[in-house]
Length: 59
Image 1 (cartoon, rainbow, N blue to C red):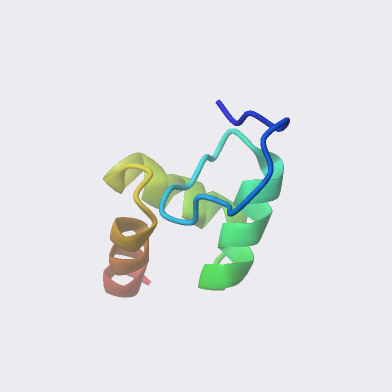
Image 2 (image 1 turned 45 degrees about the vertical axis):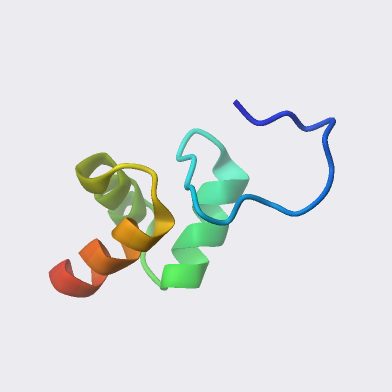
C-alpha cells in the first residue's frame, strides 16, 4: 500500500491498479483506456515494463 506520508521520487517501476491516480497516470502514459491497463496488469503483474511490453504485443 502507498504510504502517502512519504515524499520523494515515485516508484515508476510498479503499477498499482487500486489507486485511481496511478490508473489515470499509466493509462495516459501508455495511451490506453483504463480498463485495458487494468487487464494488462492482471495478465502480467504490476511491473511497468512488462505491462508496456504486453500492451505493445496485444494492442
